[in-house]
Image (cartoon, rainbow over all chains, first blue to last red; front, side, top):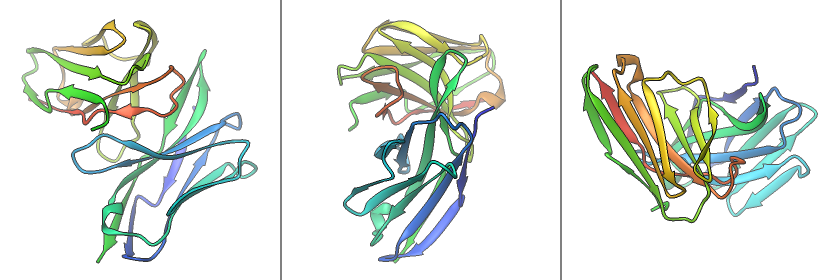
Amino acid sequence: GENVEQHPSTLSVQEGDSAVIKCTYSDSASNYFPWYKQELGKGPQLIIDIRSNVGEKKDQRIAVTLNKTAKHFSLHITETQPEDSAVYFCAASARLRSNYQLIWGAGTKLIIKP
Amino acid sequence: ETGVTQTPRHLVMGMTNKKSLKCEQHLGHNAMYWYKQSAKKPLELMFVYNFKEQTENNSVPSRFSPECPNSSHLFLHLHTLQPEDSALYLCASSLRDQYEKLFFGSGTQLSVL
């Protein structure tokens, strides 16, 4: 079946440094790629998304890049701050049976060291 | 506050109990979802409702029974659950059932003893 692989499972970076989380997807027809941030005790929250007709999208300190040929997409967080500590999930759209669904990665726990 | 409220936040139940999870959204969205979240695993889609009609049942066991009386409310009725059903159950909503820009509640942490 369709799947999304997410790496690393845990990432520890020094405050102020950059963090990169990578995902690969299997469905070449996937055209929508969101990233969600989940803080402790809360549900996931959308932080950025990208469509397949765009190679890169930025929003302040976060950016997402997409390589359709390689079926990779990545989340980049620059100038990391303590409040960036959370679990981050990537997802990719996929057609399953007669409907589209989101296929999720297993998550990356990002730890920002002071 | 995401505009999606789930109750209760925590629930402990025995295998023979019957309980219900509730979700309410104040965003004017037309689609609502139930997801199951287990530690270190991808989110698992359970059910999707669009304009109160179920559009997706992701092969969920019948011991989970959803109900959507209107576009703002979603319930998950639980009965005769198994210990492996212990997980965080998340409700989400979106403007349409295209899985874009989902708004999640904080979830119900369920423990089945």
